[in-house]
Image (tube, rainbow, N blue to C red; front, side, top):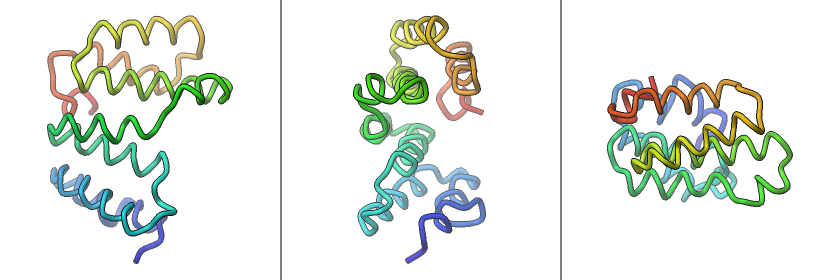
Length: 139
């Protein structure tokens, strides 16, 4: 019944569960919210569901929700921002599914095509923390 802005706020709902380390509960709450609110099925909600599933160790669910946040059309038609998001999402997913070569390839491609912004730094941090689970490497 909350608006998405309220549901997504730092003091409510899934973020509160996440802060308590209840990642799977938070992810499932986002999924339930999206099921009940068609307007909330966008990139933001799917991304955060994927992140929480990844933090909770449910790799298959993480992969499912990460995949809903990007498409090749973003890379082709979304300009630099769309392309950067495409590689950020795919790179994060590569870390979660343990494909080190793919993550390294994405980082190298990013270095040739896009500014080394915060998302780039997140990918390089994941790569540098390869031996850690997502919940530790992301922090």
